[in-house]
Image (cartoon, rainbow, N blue to C red; front, side, top):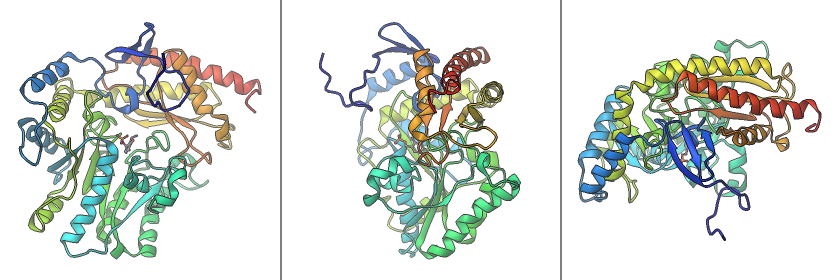
Length: 448
Ligand code: PMP
């Protein structure tokens, strides 16, 4: 039958999904897949959870949609209250959107509006990092330091990436992690002095780098120094927690690992946990208070922002996470997963590093482990591992191209937070076999 659907790769045949239950997905032929990456690191509580589905039906039976310019709703109010309870101090306000890209782009606009309301209309520029991903819409892609995804659209993008992100695995030889943390953070200060802080509204960063690097965790001290610099030069700090937020890294928000408070947080993915498209910007009392005392209107929003159906679903997801203590479970099971990945790294020379935080973990592949020389991007080693895993019924997530082949040929392993240690063992078994297949090809010289 002829397809009319534009899929990610035109011309490729994709299996037809049938249903999902827990950490498993089943296609129409009955083949079972371990969802080792929660889809796009989004199906955080697993598939087919009855309690969520019941609450969705309940809301649909009352009202699915009421326009936010005409009504507020119980679920939207309750979700914003729940997020304020979960969020770091002062981040007491939620603005709902529908995707991570919309969330980061809205955070950018709120930062600019904040400075305008305070009388600093020239503070319009955002500084971001290379090796980052903040989304695919024009504003979000402008902030994204993801070389491969930018390439085609550079002529229409703003030049926002200006500093490098800490990448401990590839730090300069002889440099301690402490020195490296400070030296990377100080790049922000240098960029501010070059551009002029009077032109800069905000700095945006992912607490743990996802799609552009493969679960790259910054060294301790980095974000503390970043916060200091933002305060010193009067620029806002936006944490892009679209991938890391809401328990994924073993804390409610990844920034808690370093005890810092951003001014704005972008959320997405795990918020709707695959049950509904929803995302959010969390904003501080200062930002919302300033805008309220100024024009009084946030210039942003989308048709489906804060709709009752999606907010009720996200609220059910957060309640489910609380009831099942999934954040602490992610911390404990994340430690076990990383241990198991490190065992794989010891077994296969192809793996340069196993890393991660909580249940956001990654493997980086290298041609030469002692020198850390990467494979040519054209060899698609990460992609080969991904496909070998897929054939065996294991889903993992790509994280290549962030630095356009200079480094970072990695995959992300990020199963639903409900995964058990036994299921982690099952997942590692499949991953082991997939990597063995690619390692054999490398050893045989067919990929040289
Ligand atoms: N920020 C981060 C950190 C992400 O990982 C992603 C998605 N991979 C986005 C933003 C964009 O989210 P979306 O695809 O929902 O627009």
